[in-house]
View (cartoon, rainbow, N blue to C red):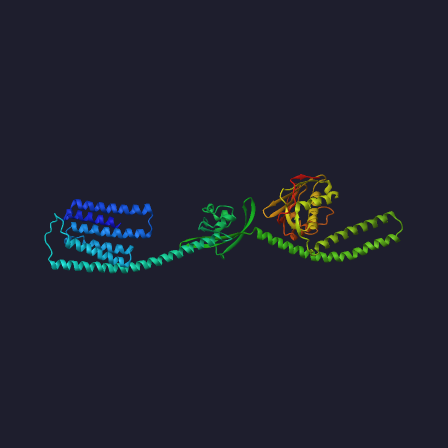
Length: 534
């Protein structure tokens, strides 16, 4: 840039010389000077871009460039009359310019060099032929001129050094602040991107302008795709409430359809002021589906524990008079004359007493705190095959068309074999009772990630939503003659094995029970492929 200024300065001088009557620069030296300046500048920029020079090499280029500029100014001063030249003060541009690039001691060295070049040009080199000098300076005047130039040069060097010190101090402070700002910005981005909550900001109309990575993961979209969408459509929140006097932040829970399933999203949002005249909103949200499910499960466990404690006490109190009734009937048989109707009535009383006693025994067994489980390394498929052998003579199960689909890999879990067979018994028998005689029941095993799936599907009567809600509640039987404890016992067994259970059902279309057990490790039991049994 300085070379361009220098060329423009020379051109302006030449123009003024023609218009006003200054000494005109000789054409050939003038053109050569301009050509030299242009070629030097082009070579400098070409070398920087081509070779990607580092700061040390560029510093040497700068020093060489400043010296070349001083030589060009000396040539211009010589061509315009030496001591009578109006361009002698052009050296003063090089000194502060050099202060930007070189050290403090280099400033003074550059100043001495410029003064030596001026002194050599003015006093030692004869004037250029063809320059018409109207008057010459006396030796005293020439000495005064050089002394004044010396003072001006070194005052300029001193001021430039002071300015350089202030400039570099300010530059260093700015560089430190820029580094701090970059660090804070990077830290802010990392904090926002590593949040376990989704975060979006919107403008005053509710249009999303920023979304972190977790926001995209929770909503199953790329976070860049969220930009430009309306927060009311994405998160289901009403931002028009801002005009009302509300206590901020506002919190709400909404159900969103995400990735083909309904998810419960908790959203907290409040106004966000970007500028005094520009506002927007900040929304932070989380997926609460699993948390709500755990809360419901915890409430259900508390409910079951309370019901169990109360009902166990009641059942125990019922059992004592029931034993008395049964004993009394047996005694009455000896005193009542033989009568067919009386015998039938006593048989009914004794039979129902036995049935009621069985129900109470089952419930007391269910409500009793579970004993220590005999947890062993098991292949769930092998355990189910043993169950099939034991259940082959059951009246309900033997009438089913039981389709069993296994896998080649081992379905390995840590479990109690007796409790697992009880779980199989209750689930498969319930499926058979929900189906017609000869109905089809499909059993499937699979390994999904770190879980082993045991799935039973029937194609029977199915259940309504109300029945599903009470499925694991004790004494909630949906068939005639049932005790209502089978699925409650299944639930307890699943909890003992640290698994989870889900039931899907549609009225008049059938029910699917999926039980997930934690995958343990591979054991040396082969599992055959899909097969079909009775």
